[in-house]
Image (tube, rainbow, N blue to C red):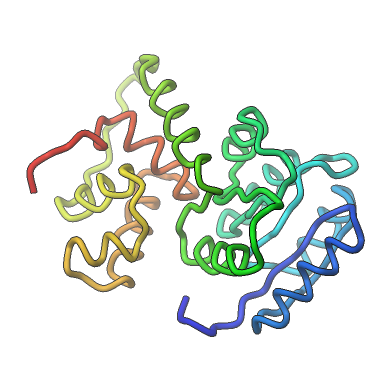
Length: 225
């Protein structure tokens, strides 16, 4: 998204002052808060009509909790970006949220500027984590990728172009779209197009799943070029 572009955002948190504060910060930054909710049930009932591009979500909300809400909204709309904003930085909470489909995870000690930057970046397709958490997530995917997958009978591997593979390798290294564009001397939009084409070919829904696929294929290893 371009700087200053208005986003449709939904905020879910069971603490009224926190929920209203986040919504106010987003509105003051020029975004449109299309809905708020205090618990999982309310969030899921309002989500279809609100159609947010980004869902800012606390994990510790009355049932269904944030992990369950994440999984359900991503199932309903694979294009939605879920940014978790939680008091917890526990490894188990982070990994559960990411596995459910969250593309960002900030702890509530994050500044207003960090929150607004994270909302813009997840809307752009980047994965955003509080410092220290990104390495934890990538480390877990590395561990999972060491477990051999069961062979699939007669499944043809999708064919990626050399450029798509190159972009995918840089995604797996944790580079943002902006950094990839600078590295390859191409536009930010071209990077996004390559990623979207790759997601479609691999039948994946978001960048987190793409990183896991890349790690499973060993594409994060240093290669010449």
